[in-house]
Image (tube, rainbow over all chains, first blue to last red; front, side, top):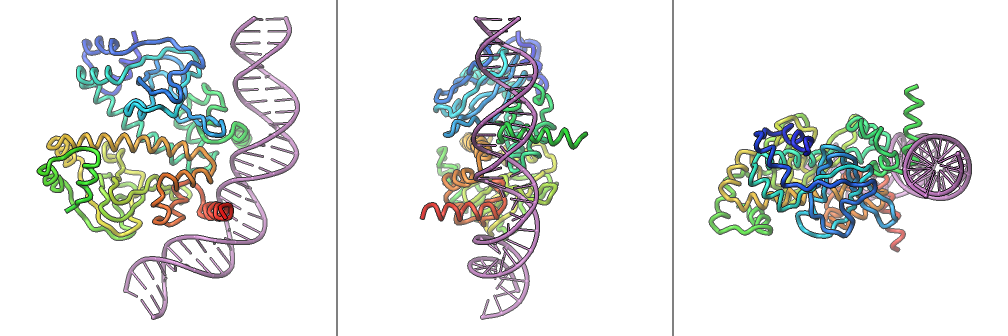
Length: 193
Length: 193
DNA sequence: CCTCCACAATGACAAATGATAATAAATTGG
DNA sequence: CCAATTTATTATCATTTGTCATTGTGGAGG
């Protein structure tokens, strides 16, 4: 049973014990290996994914082969390609695990049924959608700043990622090379000493 | 009467003639001068704005005084600080006109009333919200690429902005200096010749 | 235990971008 | 129409970032 899913939802809205019981049945739980794909570029995204355990990334591979990370997701976070899911068009993104873990997936239809059955979950969904939107806006403003400030903003906002993610993945999220990030970290270490 | 507002909505959803009649009463129309603010940093955003005529920008002023543009908006587009509007917290952004024009504003309450009265408008709102989200994601991927590619992606996506906006505003949107943009344009002009 | 591979750090050099300053051109508002 | 303001270009130089090559380290898996 996903205690985490329920507790994540109840951080934002109230659910009766009975509602909490009914929620997991709308999802499918699956164990996932490291490097396993939840979505591949060119596929139509059919699910919203809730990360029960582990860590993953959503990224595109551009024409030069460079991987640009749109988002990371860890325990208690959601991830999907919303545009592909809603419009049923092929996705430009890959979603792949960086660590093994457990993922709960829910289809568009099941999500709709869940909203109808438990309106508080729909309210929860709206709240986190708004947060996701605001997070993208913040991200855009970061990306308009020099690399050092981007990195510092990232670390300040998500300190737990600092130790958990490989540095070259962080670099791909910040839009810089791994070498540049290594230099920045070196510079910071020297300055603070 | 805002013919543009109605025609913009009916591009996405169907409205009866009678519904079309009732919509404008939910809005206030205001003429706006160049440089006029629709929202100032520190204020709580109280409206969604529909641009009937003219052009505006949403931006933050960072600690060094640099202005970073989050979004432009022209005829037929919406603009607001959604986070401030929904949470009733002070905005980090300014929204200011780049050209004189006419703006239709609607409060959160009136928007809710409009949704209840004409559900098709709520559907329309969901559709454009999804598009806005997808646009922010694309923007993030652009910003992870070199300046030249950012600029070319911008021009390809919004060719009409190219002639309408001052170049230094475009530069502030792309996260580069006006001088850099000037150089890039010069380089492109030489290459294509 | 060993090999292979992913990951990180570093140096040398090239390219891109920022900072500053000077100038010219275009536009705004009276 | 004119003055003031805004906008754009260009050159120079400093800084940042990218590219390429090399090395070292630690962990995964046979």
